[in-house]
Image 1 (cartoon, one colour):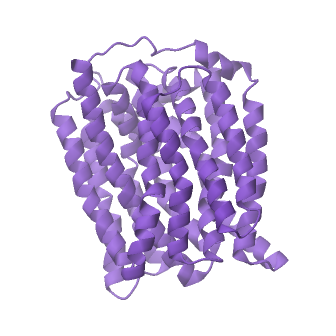
Image 2 (cartoon, one colour):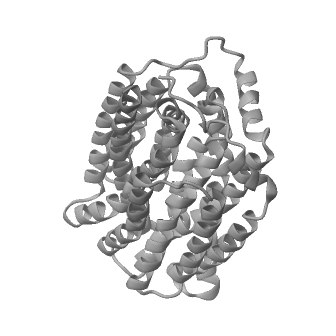
Image 3 (cartoon, helix red, strand yellow):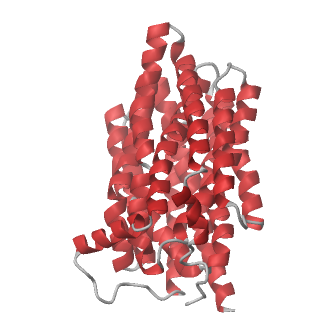
Length: 419
C-alpha cells in the first residue's frame, strides 16, 4: 500500500514535469524561430540555446549538494517558480517593441540559473519515492515527459504562430509554472522531507559527491563517454531547426519536429509499460549506433519525408539509451549520496552539449560561407559527420570491461521501500 501511494505521488510529480516540459518547449521553439528570422544565423540560435543551458550545467553540482542537505521538493518549487522571472523579462521586452538578441540571452540565462535547482532534486526524489524494480519503468516515463517539448510543443507552437506571435507562447509557458509548483507542493505535503541530520561542510559534501561517481571506474568512464556522445547528439538537436527552416516555414518545422519526436513517444510508452529487464549495455550500444545511422540519413537531402523518417528513428532510440544509462548509474550509487552524485553526473555527462552548442552553429555558418551552400546544407554536413562519430563511439563502449561489470555490481537493486 505504501509503495502504491508513493508511485501515485511520483505520477503527480511527473504530470507537473510534463506540463513544464510542454511550456518550455513552446518558448524554446518560438525563440528559435524568432532569432533565426531576425538574424538568419545558426550561430545566433545556438548562442541562445547555449546560454539557456550553461547556467543549469555549471550550477548542477552545488544544486546536487543542496538536494542532499535540504528539502528536495521545496527546492524544486523554488527553482521552478523563480525560473519564470527570465521568461517574464523577455515577454516585457517583446511587449515594448521587440526583444533584441542580447535581451533574449539575458532572459534565458536568468531562467536557467533558477532551473538548475530542479534536476538533481527531481532525480533524487524519484529514488526517494520508488523501489529499484520500478526505476526502469519510471525512467521511461521521465523520458516520455521530456519528449513532450519535442512531441507536443513544436506542432502546437507552429500552429499558434500562424494566428499570433511569440508573445502568446511566452504567456502560456509562464502559466505552466503555476501548475508545476502546485503538483510539487502536493507531493511535498504527503512526503516527509529527507534532509541531512549532520550537515557536513559544503566543500566536504562536494568531495563526497565526487567520490560517489568516481569510486567505481565503470560509472565514471560511462559518464565521460556519455559526455562525448551528448556532444554529437547535441549537434543534431541544435542544428535540425536551421536546417529545416532554410527551405521550409515554421509550420512545416513544427509538424516535422512533432513527427520526429513521436519516436520518443513510442519507445517511451514501451519502456513505461515494460521497461528493460537485462542486457542494459547491449541495448545502450545498439540504440546509439542506430541513432548515429539515423543522423546520417537525416542530413542527406532537403526532403521533409526522409527527414521525418530519420528523425523518428533517432528520437525513438534516445529513451532506450537514457534508460540504460540511468539504470547503470543509479543502481551503482548509494541512496544517501544520490542528490550530490546526480549534480556531478549532470555536469560531467552534459558538457558535450556545451561544446555542441558553442561550436556547431559557428561550424555551420562557416561551412555555408566557405562552400556557398547556405546555412541548411552546412547544418546537414555537421549533423552527418556527428552521426558517423556517434556510431563509432557507441560500438567502442560495449567491450569495455569496467562498464560491463556495472550490470553485476548493483548497489540499490535490493532496496526495499523505506517510505
